[in-house]
Figure (cartoon, rainbow, N blue to C red):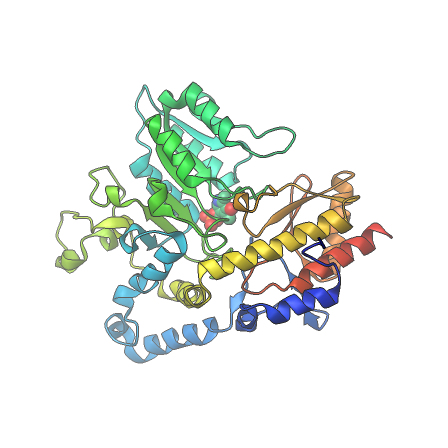
Length: 425
Ligand SMILES: *Cc1c(COP(=O)(O)O)cnc(C)c1O
């Protein structure tokens, strides 16, 4: 049997020509490099700008200019209900019911707001489980919450070590730590996809295990949202949080999101409240008593930043047309191709850290350069100089993410070709 892939540019270009999603690339601004499109593999860090964002922003500015305060009630999409205009598409992307999701704030803020409600430590049970090497915000946030409640992170912050040889975290390791410490863990807080390794986790499996030990479960979906299909509702997780500037292409510092499972929609758990979380029907009676609105909306503090929500609305409309299942199909194939190129053409210089099983990863491949950090940095800089845009994560990983909305198979060939060139220098 012949290999399913070929390393030639001609083969890659034929794939691009046959790609049912190929026209979506034209909806994005591709940053140029020396007068040509760069090979942009950094959608895991900052997704590209949809062309439709600028006119959409311009329209909101026009409403503001022409309507002033009346823009809250008039215009095509009145600002009063603006966060609701992204709700259904957001729910589809994360596999939730519309009332379980809300676009608000940023990831770090939402993580704290969620922990106010879902990290309720007691003397017997006050630990939080995260993965070792977690993204700094996640670690700082959980550590500061532990301190805020008067506990000591040196004992109450449990960090799940990855397997020393693979750098990955197995389900067995999660099971082991829960068996050992589950009775004192209040909250299990893990990523959907680990940012450094690109490993995807089984959210439903983790939730099942953690719930058996009586722990609350939250997921940080920064690298998972818009990258792989999610079934948040069915996973049973208590909450999740994410940002929207990575695979969701909603712009630098974009409005993030949160998921609160339906069973908490009317929770009596404490929360930090603001007027936009108040029952919509009576919000403008401006009464002294906070009556939370049903579902995730009840965690909103402020009236939403319309100009910041606009790119998210535009971007989610693209996701609606493309569909997560078609995006996933291309993502599996193009990431598989990139991996095959690395393994077949570059095995003497590069090693893929990300799991090989497609269901254990999204678009991102984390690639280690053999021979140490200095060589890694040298290759990374060579790639950047040649218009191959990835990113670097200390101590020795280059992250390359072919995003199915705008990356081409030809980009993968350019990556492999340029890396080969560097190795032959
Ligand atoms: C990108 C990312 C963040 C960023 O948090 P912000 O609040 O959006 O700045 C946090 N956690 C993880 C795991 C991330 O990948």
